[in-house]
Amino acid sequence: MSVEKMPLRGDMSGFAAAWRKLFGFGGPVVDRIAVALVCLLLLVSIFGPWLTPHDPYTINPLAGLEPPGAAYWLGTDDVGRDVFSRLLAGAPLTILAAASVVVLATVIGVFVASIAALSPRWLDDIIMRITEIFLSIPSLVLALGLTAVLGSSLTSIIIAMVAALWPGTARVTRNILRETMTSAYVEAAQVMGVSRMRLMLRHALPNSMDAVYVLASMEVSGCIVMMAGLSFLGVGAPPPSADWGSMIAQGQEFITTAWWISLFPGLAITIAAVAFGLVGDAIRRLNDPTLRASR
Image 1 (cartoon, helix red, strand yellow):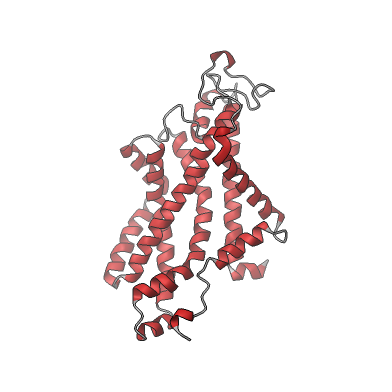
Image 2: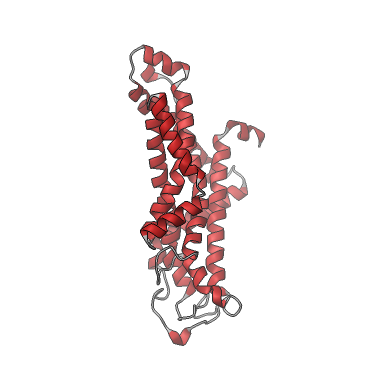
C-alpha cells in the first residue's frame, strides 16, 4: 500500500461524526439542549440587530429606568434605552467576536505548531520557549496589558484575546504533530523519499485536526466570559457600545434600584458560556474513545 493510500481519519470525519451525534436523537438531552441554545445564540448574533423592537442607541430620558413591562420587555437603562434591544444589538459584539477570536487564535496556533514540528530540534525548542513565555502570563493580565497599549475598542480586545489564546493551541497541536511525525508509517514514508512537508500537510496535520476542533469549541466559552470581563473593566468598545459586558458595567450603580439593567446581560453571558462549554465538552467526549467507552 502506498503512503498516499494509507487509511487516515484526518478528513474531519471524527468532528463531523460528533456533530451528527449531537444533532441526532440518541445523545443525552443536556447535550441536545446545549446545541439548540448554541444555534439560537448564533442566529441571534447574526440577525439580532435587525430584530430590535426599539433603537438600541436612542436616548429617551422620559423612559429612563422603566421596569420590565409590556412596552419594554426587559426594562430600560438610566437614559431610556431598551435593554432587550441592546441585548440583541450586542450579541454580535459578544458571541461572534468570541468566535472570531477563537478562529484566529486556532489558525495562528496551528501555524506556529506546524513550523515547530517541521523545524530542527534547536529551532523547535526556541519556538516552544517563546510559547511558554506567553503561557506563563495569565490570559486576563496579558489581555489587559495589550488593550491598555492599543486603546479601548473591540479590535483591541480581539487582538489581545488572540494573543492570549494562541499559545495553548500551539502547544497542544505541536505535541500531537511531533508524535505523529515520529510514528512508524511516517518514518517508512521518509525512507521512500516523501518529504517532511508533504507528510505534514497530507497526513500529520489532518490527523491532528480533531483535537484542534475540540480545543477550539471548548475555548469559546471562556473567551465569551473573558471578553465580557474586559468590557466590564472599561477596556472594551467605548460607549454607546451595547456589548454585554459594558451593559453590566453601566448598570452596576443602579443594581439595587434598577436590577434589570445588569441582570439580563449577566444571564445572557452565563447562558452563552454554559451552552458553549457543554457543547465543547460533549464534542470532546464523542471524540475520545476512552470517554465514549465509559458512558
